[in-house]
Structures are given as structure tokens and as C-alpha cells.
Length: 528
Image (cartoon, rainbow, N blue to C red; front, side, top):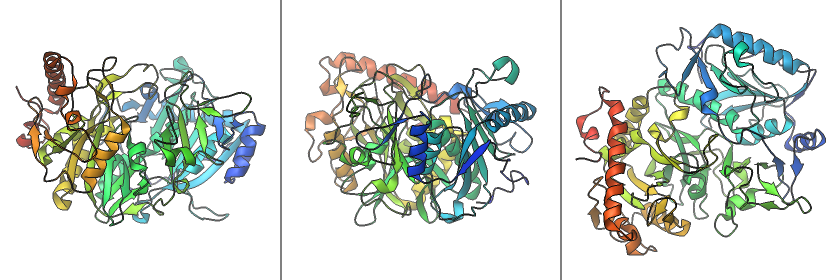
């Protein structure tokens, strides 16, 4: 990837550390993590680490350095908080000095399975298990003993705690991206997901200039080469639904869509573990073995057997593993243009139907809205589901205006004639606390029917509040389940909840007033 237009300077810094371990294999990193007391081995063979206070992302502690190179291209605000270049330089010096007194671990890898749009990354970590996490999640090109210089360097120092009065941070934790110096600086938090998502943010900034649509979605492909995308925020089912035994996994979280098709950014998967059962999610369950990294999963202290139903540390229990731990995964992670696209939402209000076919205009509207519910543990302080709107189903990772990404989606839909479905993986029969979570077997059946083309021509019922086209029947799914209102014991209560939710949609979409959007997209949302 040509990143020279951002800055003429290389994305390198002197690698700190009194002893530096470079590009160790997974076995050596596991060994180091255990010997150093960072983690322990579990009975399935996976390494287990706990992350202390930070068991999820800390978006309020994320900053982007604002300088002349990016000042006019970043959507500055609560998501992309500006930081002064001098402040970054001072913090970087302090972090490097801190790491110089410690052993460090280096991984040289890449992001982007399509060579034309690949980013070389160097990950420097204080913790051996963080380096294993990066090694298993990013691409691992065979560069031998002489890897090329990186386009971006990620420095992770969880033991370094910032001093807000001195460093200008909000707390002891920080994630700072400097596009000009091509450095990502992370400290004060042991949550490994910050490494992954900060690199995703970088890709989301770089790729639109190359005409590539970067997406927060999983992807898989069928026997006939029919690719599918699954958009959604954390906890909505991207990893679960894309890990389909009847289809080949391309990737579970981050992809690009360009003229040649789709490609995975990563070489691994980062799946939620809470409630994991081998009968429901066998591919993920069986991927938890030697080389995988478990985060915050509770294990029996004697047998070391994980208890995936124990959320006492956090509901955001996680496992990271290489994508080739999934049988039949597509290696390298590239595929053709998608025929079917799913927008996944975990609707805590229990209003949205379990599946609905969207018009192109509705697809654009719901993509820009990005409605779901924040689930427990995905961010600090979230203990119960909270309704939220996250543009493009991933606004925390979008440096540019959401309209930029929506226009890329609209262009791709028009050129490649993909069918889009809205799928509610959240609650049915009432809101959270009254209704119950949609059963996975029925969601899988609806997704399978859509992939097989069985819902394209089936009769639909137009839902009155959002104008959604809801199939009246679906193979393997009770017909009454498709009608969200009929699942409530009190229809009037459903109507009230639907009106409230429709109002929230309209209030949220008002943020796009004045944006260069066709009027038919604005009209595709709930009316009245």
C-alpha cells in the first residue's frame, strides 16, 4: 500500500528494550508468557490471560494526532479526538524510555490479504502474550530473517500508566494514532483488542483514497463461489454466523471491497466466548487449542477447564486464533463480489423483525444509522444492553465522515447487485428483561434461506413503523416468529415501543442533515 502521501517519513522507531525478542514462533511466545507469569495454559491447550481493570475497549481514551497532513480529512469529534503533535512526541519518549528498561517482543506482519492494498506492520509489545495475540490475528508473510521496514509501528506498553496532568490523557490508559509518523501508541490497558482495532482504524483511513470500501464485517463463501458479508458491532453475531460448517470462512471481522472482490484484513479471528457451547458453535469451540489466546475466561483452578458460561470477570470473554484453525478457511482471505449482505443488530427493544429484505435506499439508511445495542463488556462500564447508533456498524473505528463509507457502499451495491437483509439477533417477545434472545438455530435458518435465494421472491408483509419488507415464511422457522408484534403479549405495548424506536432513528439521522445524500435515502427511514 502506498502510504507515502501521508508522510515522507518511514513508520519506524528504534525498537526499545534491554532485550528484544524478534518474531518468535507461537510456541516460544506461549512459553515466555507462562514463565514470565503473564498467563497460564488451559486444559484445551490455549493460553489464558486476564486483563484486570480494562476488559473491553476504552473509546474515550483514544486520540488521533492532528497536524497539517490530516487536519482536513478526519471527522473530528467525540470519536476522533484531536491530540497535539508535541504532546504525542513527549509521551512517545516516555514510553520508549519505559520499555528500554524491559524485555520486549517484536512481530513483523501485515494487514490486508490483497497484496495491492496490504499494509506492513511492526508490533512491539511489553507482554509476550500480546505479541502472540498480534501474531495470531494479523497476517504472517514468510519474510524469513529480513522482514521489510513497516508502514506502521504499533507500540503496546500496558504497564506504563499515563499521568493525565503531565501527559494530557483522560486517564492512565491511552490509544494514540499518529498518521504522519505512522505510529500507534498504546498504554495503561492490558486489553489486547486495542491493538487490533487501532490498526483497523488506520486501514479505514487509508483505503478510501485507493477506492477500497473498508468494512466492519465478517465474510464467508459458498461452494459456488457466492460470497456473503455480515456487518455488525461486537456481540451481534458476525463471528458466529460466518463460522458456518457449510461455507468457507474468509474472515470474521474486517474486510475490504474493491474492484477485484473482497479481502480479509487479518489472518485470525477474535471471537466472543460467553455462553460458548460445542453443539451451537463447533468451529469456534474447536479452534480453542494450543496457539489460541483466551482473554478473561474463568477456568477451574484444579482442572484448568474453561467455564464459558462464567461472566464474573466480564461478559466480553474472548479468544483469538489463526483463521486456519477453522477447517476449510479461505487462505489467502480473498473472494469474489458478495451476492448477499446482512446487517446484524442486537435490538434490545424487541421491536425489529428477525429478518427483513431491504431496498437499496433502505440499505443505505440503515448502514448510516448502524442501530444496535451495546452489549455487556464490549466497552468499559457497559453492564446491561444499551441502545445505540453507530454509523456504518463501526463508527468508533472510522476516522472519516460516515457519509464517505456510505457512498462507497452505495456504489458497490449498484455495481454488483447484492441483496441486503436486516437481521435482528437481539430480543423477541418483548424488550431485554421481558422477552428472550433470538434462538441461534432460527437465525441460522433465516440466514441460510437468504443465502440460498429462498427469500428473494417469497411474499412479504410491510411492517408499518419502518417500512421493512418481512418474509411471511421461511424454511425451518415458525411463521409466527417472523412477525415481531405477534410475539408480544400486549400488541399496544409493542406499538408504543416501535414508535419510540422509530423516533430514536429519526433523531439520530438528523445528524446527516446537510450531508450530500439523495432524498430517497432520507425517506427510506421510519416516517410519521
